[in-house]
Amino acid sequence: MQVWKDYQAQHKDRFLNELLELLRIPSVSADSRHNEDTKRCAEAVKQRLEEAGAEKVEVCPTAGHPIVYGEKIIDPSFPTVLVYGHYDVQPPDPLDLWTSPPFEPVIKDGKIFARGACDDKGQFYMHVKAFETMIKTNTLPCNVKFMIEGEEEVGSNNLGIFLDSNKERLKADVVLISDTSMISLDTPSIDTGLRGLAYMEVGVTGPNRDLHSGVYGGAVANPATILAKMIASLHDENNHVTIPGFYDGVQELSAAERKKLNEAPFDEAEYKKDLGVEELWGEKGYTTIERTGIRPTLEVNGIWGGYTGEGAKTVLPSKAFAKISMRLVPGQDWVKISDLFKAHFEKIAPKSVKVTVTAHHGGSPYVTPTDHLAFKAASQAITETFGKEPIPVRGGGSIPIVALFEKVLGLKTVLMGFGLDSDNLHSPNEKYDLANFYKGIETIPYFHQYFAEGSKK
Image 1 (cartoon, rainbow, N blue to C red):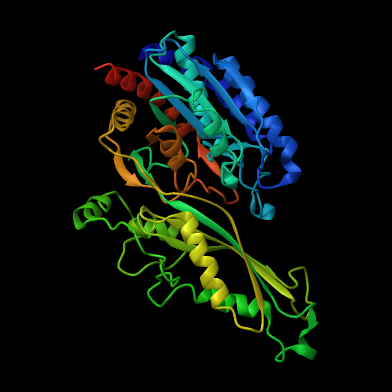
Image 2 (cartoon, helix red, strand yellow):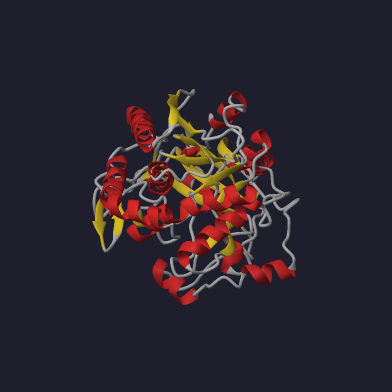
């Protein structure tokens, strides 16, 4: 619609500057040192929603970080879209690998570099500006509700409580999320599903203190060595996870479904070049696209113990630790998988050490039905602005709350993301293309239009 394009062109510089202001707030939910920053960011989101035209906007306290809620009800008989996003971000570590400070956004080569640029400040803010576009041009075709949380990166532990307590306020017809990626601007795609997550921390303790590695080495079990062996045993020679019962219930795709999934463009040589690796790794019998979308995995996210400072210190460490995440697929329950992991890890520990296993957080996998009205509206919207019909793909990441939207609110979710897999999510030098940011703002109003039209048929 030309009126949308005109408004967006007139205000595009302001849209960007407002996003840059949000990116300057270090709203790291995992680090208690940033608790005040997360509150400040929530207040900033509230202000921007009010400026865009939302009503009943409030910062809702939780036992953790607050949730920002706002709405615009133009007619109770009209369909309602619940927009979800998150303003919290991952820790920026390791800081020395950033080419510019993570919370001082810079624009280089048409890309915004900052923590949260894509995940998820840049993406949820597209919805705020698309909403503003429709409000200011008097073209909003449906009711819109916003729920922007501050704990997605730490498992959304308090959002489920918020859903239970606010079912009436959150009544809607569909949930719309931009927190995923597409193949490229030249090859648009829509995620039809997300993997679940089970996140664990393990500790191995040997002697009651750090020991001199010369005096005691060879006589006492080294927790770092034991931990490394235990972790290595979690995969077999075919890179299958060895935890008993891990694959029980996994829903296998048919040969036809796998064939369709692998029709998505994928350049293995370019993939390896981008990552700086000579060879890919993964579960035998599956393609890279399948390994990252429809198969469960187990990965070490961090491992430490002993002396890691500058120079040498010859110690046999008393303790060693690791953080481990498992991505799950339909048919797997994250609580059950967490229990299976704990039982197995404790069982394989030798008597020379003691182990602790703590489950941090998790979430269930989710699949969006492609015959749902909202999915069709998203496909139509992308086709309208990209000039190409989007390819359905499976996303490898997790948004723990999505399955709860259906369980608690009875709502399907559409995952209309505009990021790229190469945007360095959770890594140093996270980025977001300006072209993707503006394309999202251009496309989202069409989703609302097509969804409203389809709902009235």
